[in-house]
Amino acid sequence: SERLFGGFKKTSERLSENLTTAVTKAKLDDATLDDVEDALIISDLGPSAARRIREKLAEKRFGLEISQQELKEAVAEEIAEILRPVAKPLQITAFPRPQVILVIGVNGSGKTTTIAKLAHLFQEDDYGVMLAAGDTFRAAAIGQLATWAERINVPIVRGPEGGDPASIVFDAVKSATDKGIDALIVDTAGRLQNKRELMDELAKIRRVLGRLNEEAPHDVVLVLDATNGQNALSQIDVFKEVAGVTGLIMTKLDGTARGGVLVAAAEQYGLPIHAIGVGEKIDDLRPFDPDLVARVIA
Ligand code: GDP
Image (cartoon, rainbow, N blue to C red; front, side, top):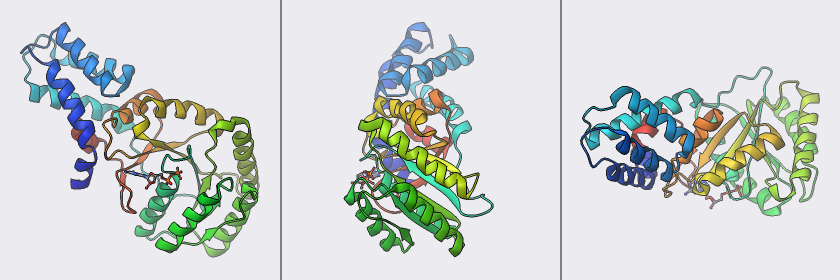
């Protein structure tokens, strides 16, 4: 939790600063509530979460005296209320194995790094993991994933640059099945510039997977870069439409003041949040602990 605290430092400083300017009077009146709501919005929590938190505070404490510390704690509690229902770790439950986890997201979001971190988490729980290099559009993506695979010692199925992602995924599922692998994590292309092509490509992957196992893909995890703020939220809309999304992982929460977007995502979409990225190293993927995150943010 030391690292997590460090990770959210800027987000927390920003919200605290904004909240501190909000409470200048001792009583929680309408003017103060307006300021609190504004503070939450400019801290990237989004209009919907801001309104909800405002209403809850009003419901519980309107007209009562409140110190800055009490306000912070009350806001943290309301944030936790929003985050708790979406905190769901990615669990390996598929039968038959392997559990097929498609990982989607725009280039640069931290997709490749997150795949390696996720593989590492599963390894720590003694699961057998395999990677599939389904982002064949960028040669660098295949190379980067292969480098991680070697570093953490997990098998990888890869094809040539420009190869057919669906056929790589097909080979990977067969190989994972033969080897008794528990979790097959599939990298995919993140070309949102060409939505149609990406949609076709993902649909083909799904079709091929479905022929091998009706339940696959078991998870479609969208990786979002928190530094993109509200933009990260519009990516949820697009990927929901293009790929279907079963859960989120938000990256780069270290070093950004825009961590509030995590709360906005939880409130607006209600999609499970599996984990958060708080650094570039292999063990910098943290299970999503809503109470801890709420306390750290507010
Ligand atoms: P991809 O293009 O989506 O596959 O993105 P990469 O995995 O290559 O990541 C892009 C950059 O973001 C790399 O320099 C990563 O080290 C960095 N990155 C990924 N996750 C995090 C994170 O949680 N925190 C920080 N600070 N950097 C990250």
